[in-house]
Image (cartoon, rainbow over all chains, first blue to last red; front, side, top):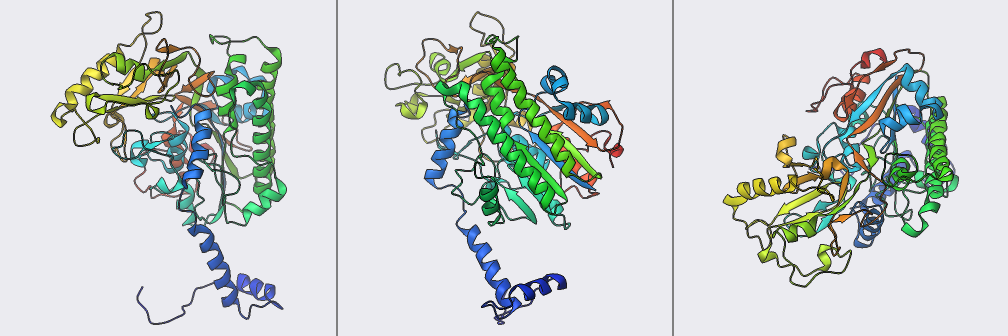
Length: 72
Length: 462
């Protein structure tokens, strides 16, 4: 999406917004937007190193499948 | 209304509805009050792709998934283990998610790496280990590790310790059910789908203690009791899950395929060598060698095979395989000759086999992904295929790798049940009806190209 704006708006259910407001009281987060941005970045970062198996992972799974009679 | 699917991998109709009926009060009560029957699996009747056939309503051909390994296109032995990223069609929980339904998904294969969804997901037995992210959202893993530190995706089968492994399978299953019960009780959800793999592991390893008709049958009261008490444990957990569900929950107990006694393993690559289809450069290999350890004269080979509960036979086609020799125009002829020869394979004592051989196009309208040229069910699946070679005989009474008691059978089970409804019908059905049933129960009218129909009698639980 081509836009010059640095920020955009997403909608949150009001009770959730209020819950977050309550939760960040006295923390380093200055706004609900700050907190939500932080949490979403964390979640997305968790997903990004999950492309698929690396070769070591694949070996582990293959060994187990072989021991169970599924390969060869 | 909510829908909860309890998947019992490999649960077999004769065992659940007949032999162990008296030992399984919850399953028997559900079957007698609900609608139940055999559930014909897909072809091939194998865990991967069968659970995804159930979850998407698509054929293995559409999914491009034909077993626990996919060939790296056009290679001789390059294999890839399917992951959640290979599923190119929407699962029912993804369709429901767009309708604001939250799901709990536990161990439905293949679901690693975890894909985001509105709800919670724990990945399946194809997860490398617990060091990986195996949940969505990621924080759920911490809860599981805290409450169920012994949680296990699968067991690793070690032949010398065979008798001990039954305890490990028992613990694995018990833990997964306890986790599922906690999640069903404490988390918010509209749709629930769990798969327990332990039943499959028990069947493959210990079928000889329960099936008197098996040539491997052992009259061992202690092992037989352990086998049965495993099923009692599963049944009692199903009872506990029912207590976790609201009264307006429709419950589906399903299995992806059944089981039957294994008669033996047939060394199919050895047979291909004898028939002149496969050529080795080296001499007679040592027992148990796999093709990738051997020096194969591909420029002199017309075909090779992969083993497993069914055999996949590949032709070495010019322009497709790196050193292909069969001209494209000759493929049809070669396939017909090879199919005929495979069908004529007889048993170790010259007895006739009911071998089924087919090309993927004969069973699926759409064939995606890299598939073998032939699918082979040796003696109607009673003999598994050994891909390894170097044996004195092509007929191995013990398996070449892994457990060797049971093979897969076409029919799994299903029970459709809702509390306070007395239906009591037996109707055999098909795995292709499960996804449409789930969608119908949530009143999803748009079928997104899914071909199957809901289970007969679904209106009785609506």
